[in-house]
Image (cartoon, rainbow, N blue to C red; front, side):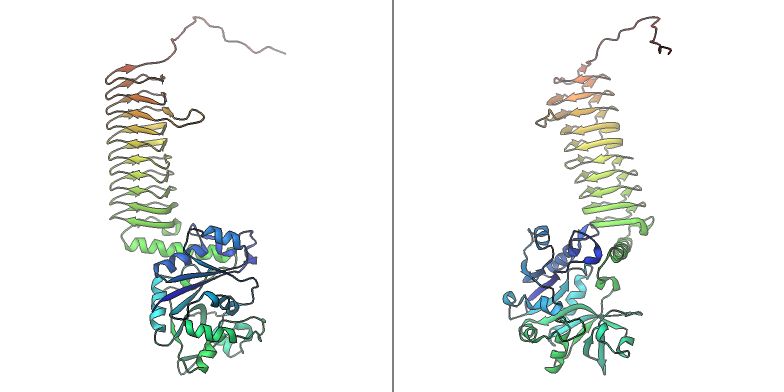
Length: 454
């Protein structure tokens, strides 16, 4: 049976007080809607239909590379109306999972369980039992079977005591959606077309309503304002931290750790406080990450230690490497095994060979550095002439003196040495010494200028 995913994403999100549509507000570095779409893709849905409205161009442009069928809801007349506008493009066979673009954390396993539970009945939903169910639609049961969903504003006092609530996540036969949605009425307290009314239609047709509950309550939490967004961010991060610790990661303080992407880890990885991981990252065995580091789309091999407050973006780091503190690896940085990158060293679009070192205050851009070389403090590769980038090539066992400017394009041969304070503009042969500096001039008994007294 084919599965379609329908995502409701037309709301404005007035309480966010933002020019950005609510479904584009970020959670863990990704738009709320992006989380839902990613989960839908994992389900291998035959079609993902997203209903958009407020900020439509912004929403569509944010996901223009995704394979999505967009349907516009020009008037926001309720959840039932939102799903109804999909009927012209909705297949009449199979089932549809109906999700909300502002409920970002529902897990693939929960949705798969819902689909399985709904296969025989033709309709099912996710419910949740809360101590305080105020404001939510109540699940009304008789002899354990769902009889209705009653919105809070329409509920009697007795019904408001019910603790089981509707999460707004459904799985429904497409044939039944085509049958039921045109029959919806807006005769209720809010004057809206409720999707929940299809439950009463299912009961009238003699159908049983399947239901499941999520493993974690935060999976079905929606976001309406900044306070809820911040609270859900913490819950989501705590869940990710717990998952990593179950995999053996030593998080010094899981409440001060953010994962905004995916992290693959080996054994005995240690991460200090206030570390942010973004994009797709992987850490090998025994990797240690110091406090305050930001690491994005980076691979780090085993036994590497990153000192505090280092920033990596799209780098590849070998094993047994020492980095930081306050180091920066920019896109294209590739560090071989046993490399040392020290404090205030920046590496961009450069490869650094086995065992080479740049321990202090250096900029290495568009460079190829061989093995066993030493880059002195204050050295920079002058890779940009104001219009184009040029390459610096440094061989094996090269010693670059302190405070060198290597003006690219330039090549330093194997075993060469450059003197401190040199500006190297020409190639240096293997095992040669290159020194370029002004001759020192000394004037004895020099009288320094004095301030004029007023």
